[in-house]
Image 1 (tube, rainbow, N blue to C red):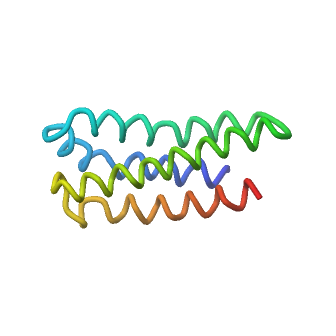
Image 2: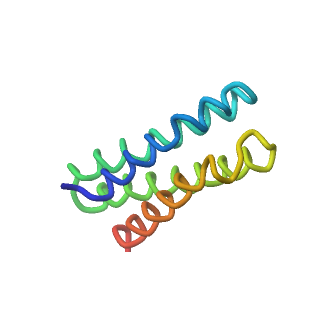
Length: 106
């Protein structure tokens, strides 16, 4: 089992409810969050089947998407679209994914 991929899928699942709230308040931010969240497992999966620098490139893209997602969730919090408790699990999972990706790209 590819643990980073599994954690990233848990992350996507954790966003279902908060993303529904965000969609009502800010469709553009919703789309940005959904795109960034989807990019993480997709690039992890693609990178797993690549080799050399191409593999690391996909994992760096996944890390960039994870950081973008974290910023977007913080923006949603700042706007009051969601509360801390709505996204705390997602932010914890993001920290895990980013730690894994940091190790994978070094």
